[in-house]
Length: 252
Ligand SMILES: NC(=O)c1ccc[n+]([C@@H]2O[C@H](COP(=O)([O-])OP(=O)(O)OC[C@H]3O[C@@H](n4cnc5c(N)ncnc54)[C@H](OP(=O)(O)O)[C@@H]3O)[C@@H](O)[C@H]2O)c1
Image 1 (cartoon, helix red, strand yellow):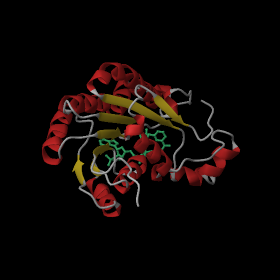
Image 2 (tube, helix red, strand yellow):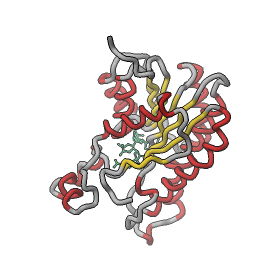
Image 3 (cartoon, rainbow, N blue to C red):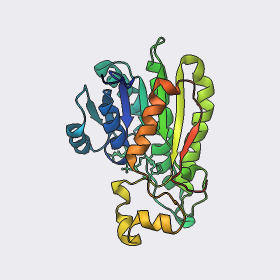
Image 4 (spheres, rainbow, N blue to C red):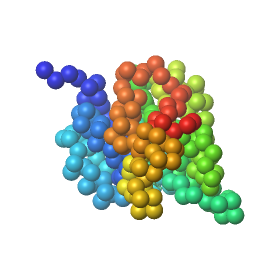
């Protein structure tokens, strides 16, 4: 007899589900028989992904999370159309490398908007819609960059450090309301977006192993999805306010 995953019939919101780690998380959670609501700008990518998902009550909403003032209405709409949300994985993220001379306030603001302000706005909206008798689990995709010191990564690293700070502080406020909130700090994960670097490096996986940056090699997104699924599960119900490293052997 098949054992229960504990996720059957649960309703999870995956923000930033159209590619990379978010897409892998949506696939993984659907394979565990959860119902998935996907959010991102590229609807066509989410529709393609939907075709590959295990059967369930899935849906997607094309939405730009930088439209901060519309996030409450989006969560309201999803709740009304799809029912109460049991968990959210916030994967939306941007972060180009920027030299100091280009680190203008508006450039910093654009990164913070997607990686941090929108995340907090989703948490606010989800906590408000949550039913009293229900648990809510929130998982955020931070990065090892939040605690590392990589050249040109000021905006990205600061946004992820802010996210981790919010996770710690909000966990204290939300615990009595049956909400857990944690983040995952991955090192380099194998996503399409980084494939361009394969040409530059002659193979990113081989390069980061060889140069000692990430001796265990590039992390498959499915492995991150496994950690996200665990954080959403009842097994993690006594864990909140943490940022779990997934380091591939990277030194931090
Ligand atoms: N890959 C890595 O090595 C790595 C390592 C550590 C942490 N992370 C973090 O993991 C998360 C996922 O990254 P990824 O590597 O999987 O990259 P990705 O494939 O580029 O995924 C980013 C996701 O964010 C969504 N997104 C970006 N801006 C958005 C906006 N304004 N509104 C709505 N959605 C938006 C994208 O969807 P649309 O473009 O369709 O809107 C996409 O679904 C990010 O937070 C990233 O910082 C990645």
